[in-house]
Image 1 (spheres, helix red, strand yellow):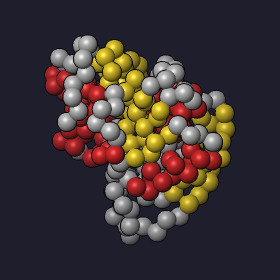
Image 2 (cartoon, helix red, strand yellow):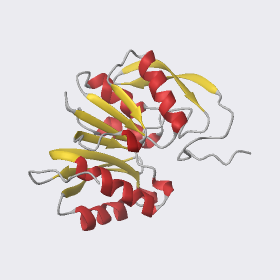
Image 3 (tube, one colour):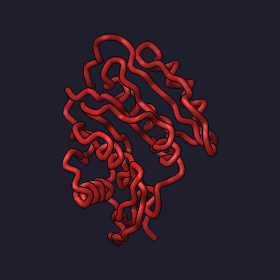
Length: 210
């Protein structure tokens, strides 16, 4: 049995592609997914809550999907904001390959599916949408949010969906305590056991990327 997790960088299990139908931005599409990634058979419930609860993304600028998986958030951002540049970021190489494949299938030329280290340090984001990988552990998760959330452009929002039973309220409290001088955090909505957290970048000058 494979020990792969969705946050494994290079899954060792044999690649098994599959196709399925999913609704993105109000339309149905035939998409490709595979084993060794997060939620390979459907759009998971947390992502569904995020996509149904979040206002339309900015029409232009740099948009970030943090922990993109096979790409339901990235593809939605690209479909709804064709003039924007969408950064689909994940540590799982197989997931990134699937995002590229699905973007090509949908004719989307504005998606960059890359490892975290491949995002240029000077890029600032007009929005961040994320179903963050809670199960990587608090230290890893906190480090990820401390790195990416300050890279929002001033006045821009991040939208994070977190299952209530997996610590959404404690994560909100940590974000307020740790990033409160730069990021204003509030609970935007609750649905189906999930919280959607809104984190707005305050101040006039973004921090330098670490």
